[in-house]
Figure 1 (cartoon, one colour):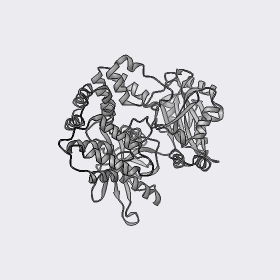
Figure 2 (figure 1 turned 135 degrees about the vertical axis):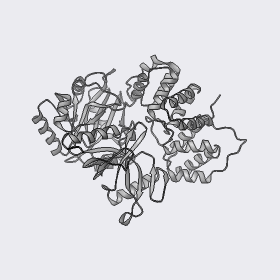
Figure 3 (figure 1 turned 180 degrees about the vertical axis):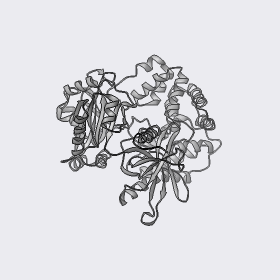
Length: 523
């Protein structure tokens, strides 16, 4: 029998009231066990406030204004009406995402309004939270993975690894609950299915990287957008680090995959850099990623240069468990030198420092140091890869904004910046610096579309926009619950290529704070 959405929203209420992580896991796990196979994936995505799996094209494109109109046009629920099921809600979400072109806004409003009229007050509350992208019940992907392991009686590491490789937590849950541990173990690298990227930690500099890794590979750190290129015969797909497909926007990358790589079955990782005589700013790269029309004209205005730096699959074999040096050798065998990122393998500090300065002089950001023995840790951040950059910066999430005054009246122009924590996000500062007037206007419109609540001066928003923030120092501060704040913070760029979950963690911020006292006195 189909499960009504009311059972899921009752679960939300129970989970929200619970403070203990273990009990949350048990509640969600028992609920998942009670569902039919076809309900598991929709239920999980609704609970995680995801309209669609990350690996699928499309988005709801439903902001605050659309939801407000849908609510105002809706009527009170008719008590005699049949209960809405979990699958029905998810199907309506999908139909909303598929509405495109002229009249699509009205279609979205009508679909959403029709759904709202069939929901109880409690059901409406949690479904709208899911649409806004933040359930606020203490449920995140980590808790959900534990719940899947609990429900399926499988090892948590098996569930986590399968999720990293498939990029679809709903599919992983279906496999775990229906087929068990052995089937999870068989979830591996598959061409045309994006893999969560391995991430790098920050390093204090060349000396710090060498003391951590010893003799290592040092690659140019490019100011572009990270991409994953899949080819299976004549089929090529290109994905961002957020697992979003952007194949149609990057024809020159597709052309390179088809005609410049001496294999027809591979997964390559690289960076798409906007480039003329020198690298163009990161924002120019992202303009290419968002274009779906007039691609030829866009390609001429903003040419893309491809730099490859890793290979994860080649001719029927996964390479993620192979050492970095072996992966580099195999990549060099199938890709021409001019497509491969410049690198140096060395343990000599002076030699690496000179290479670092060369990278900066050529317009790049710095270096990435990589352990020669490192396997590819799918979706994980660690000290096997280290970023070496000229200035201190963090990738943070905007979680709110204050209305401006004076010249900035009418704009949201002072942004609350947060790092990722186990419980969600921890604010570590504010800034209004870094944007032009036009950028203030543009981001105001975007943030209003993500609005969760508003007071006279401040708008709280769904944590979705990631920005790279430069700063001079991390200070103690009683102003924020984290106890830390950024001194002289300024926004360098909007990281459209990064998901909120990929922002820097509060642990990274605390580590950087402590690192400062290697050269400074502590009171």
